[in-house]
Length: 130
Image (cartoon, rainbow, N blue to C red):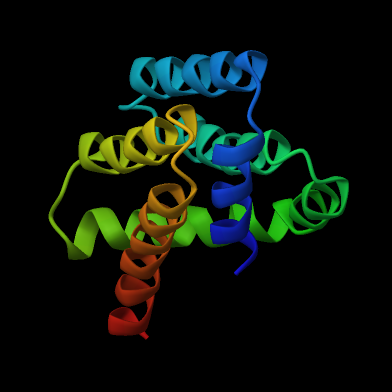
């Protein structure tokens, strides 16, 4: 709920600076796609930047308060996802890009949907491995 709401609000409230920050993060993610440690760190930063782009202090604070746990969870889920799905980091990057595009384009329902799909895949991998 938190992340999908942030994605939808980010699509509605993003500024040109938010779009530029998200785009810069995606570029950095692309440059570091083969570096799992950097990719994990950038993944967390991307989700926090989406929350910041929502321009809702409460939501941003909530995301920041769980960021350490988020990082640990993402580290595990990325490893499981890449193993279980036999996919590449490029596919994960493409999902982040699709979320960014919906935010950039101001399409709140699509941003919410793409974040939900992204998180559902991660949750599905985690549940399959549990």
